[in-house]
Length: 235
Image 1 (cartoon, rainbow, N blue to C red):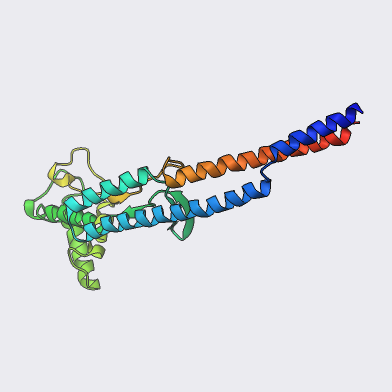
Image 2 (cartoon, helix red, strand yellow; image 1 turned 135 degrees about the horizontal axis):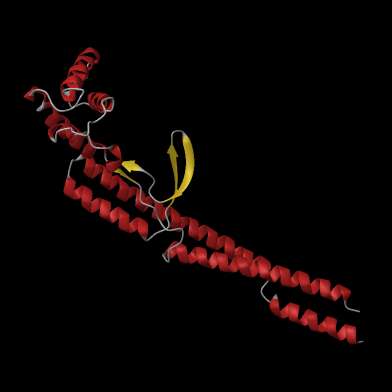
């Protein structure tokens, strides 16, 4: 008799806990997942537009527009969950953020300015570098190579030739200041803004609700399982 009352009580508790069926919660979670995916997609499109604005400003060689558009892109990325898929060296990977992008035109202007300044030093005689006037040697080689292959200053292949040939001459500890001029590193013109894994934006709040509901469903399942087992073993 006592066992029957305990079973009835457990069933009553089970009925109260599961007044809202798990399948209804699962349906809500699925709908929220679709909503979250839509919001993430909207944020990704916005990030892509802002990144395109940066590249357009770079192509227009407008340094003021580059700086402002970079700031806007960085601020947006820092306050939204940007789920992105990038491809590097033929390998696709998932990242949170803009993924790497380069300001090619700004780099070309800086590199060409450095090369133009270096070419001015060619006729100034010998230097303290043990390799002699390395700029004259590089210019002689790249001018001949460019003439042979149809490339001239300030084209990208000619610039690459300067970068590669300069790297072949190690610097001297006593190198003069004029000879210390170098083509800037491409890393200075590479950007990759990371987004947070979670942020209290629209998509972030929906994702948080999904996680909470999923946890509730899991906990409810184990409670249901425990009570069912208890009912079986109660005499």
